[in-house]
Amino acid sequence: MRKVFLWVIFINLIFFDPVLVSADAGQEEWNPSSAGPITAWTAPLCGKGKFVVQPFLLYNRTRGAFNSDGHYDPLPKGDKKYQFQEQLFAQYGITDRLELDAQTVYQENYVKQDSSSAHADGFGDSYLFMRYCALEEKGWFPHITGLFQLRMPTGKYENADPDKLGADLMGDGSWDQGLGINLAKKLKPFILYADATYSISQQVYVDGIKTRYADYLNYDFGVEYFLPKGFNLMFEVNGFLQGDRREDGARTPGSDVNYLTIAPGIGWSNDKIQTLITYQRILTGTNTDANDSIVATFVYTF
Image 1 (cartoon, helix red, strand yellow):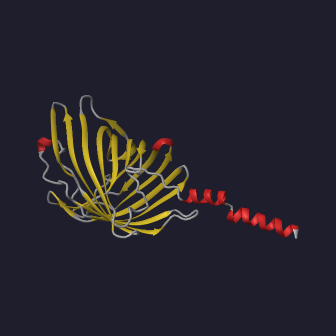
Image 2 (cartoon, helix red, strand yellow):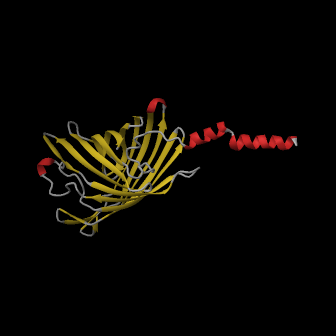
């Protein structure tokens, strides 16, 4: 009888002890406020009926370029190339598992080469997204969200002004459709992020030349560490891979584009507003500018 009594106490402590239950519930409900990553996606959706607006402010300075062999060449002494971007990202929750997103960007480009300088501003390419939550985080399974992406050529991509030194070109003219996956996993005090999107470019005429940009892959990894008093640290890695383009049906050798970017950052958040500022640096690549950037963002939910 004594053994039975001890077993009843043991089972009650394991399954019904209020302290243990409270600890488990607290762990399951841990949901810290955050602006989320800059380049990576947050897999959880904004929620049914919610409208979220997130602006991004970016200052980008080019220190040089990576050529077709991946070799870094700094800008000639005295030359300058920099950019300001104002991006706006918006989310609307149709249901708890389905949302529509949109992103647009206005940019100001500045170039100085030898004794010549130029400035141009205008809209870059825009995006529409549809995201569907396939699986909410449970146990060791991450939050999994599928993504459909449409890139729209709203930026100028041809008829460049020779006096603008290329500063007036804001896009590439191609309508691109992409499919992707977003993952997120909470491991208190960390949140881990990962995503990948494969996009298919469409044929476009650029200055009369039939151009077909290669399909491309964009991928991200991120880790967020939460500190006391609303602060958090962020670290992201972003990669981009694209093959050679075709012009009038012929492949252009050595025209592939790729790069790898790292981005450490720090943020502060409360229940009403979430902020984040990061420093981005392209470490390596081919046929791409070597950029250093400062990006700031904040989130307000209506």
